[in-house]
Image (cartoon, rainbow, N blue to C red; front, side, top):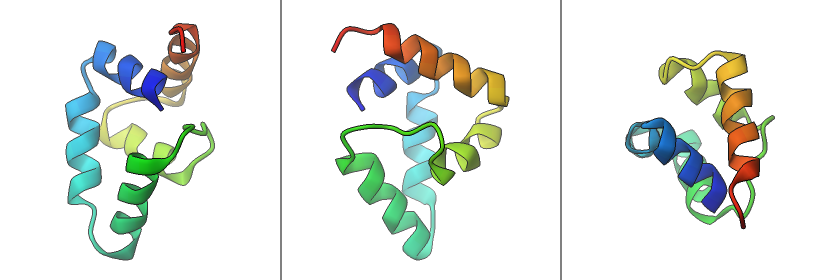
Length: 75
């Protein structure tokens, strides 16, 4: 999760992601906030990733590129 957040910070989208997750309504929003705040890993196939990508203007390749970059950040 730290690497994912560092990659998003580097891409200039971390604050947008935080805001989008904070604004999600209902149980789905609460579930997303639990995952975002407490998960140890970020999975590329999470539905949340697929939902946020387009809202951030990211293509599937752009999301993949973020994951590839995050993997290069030392743990």
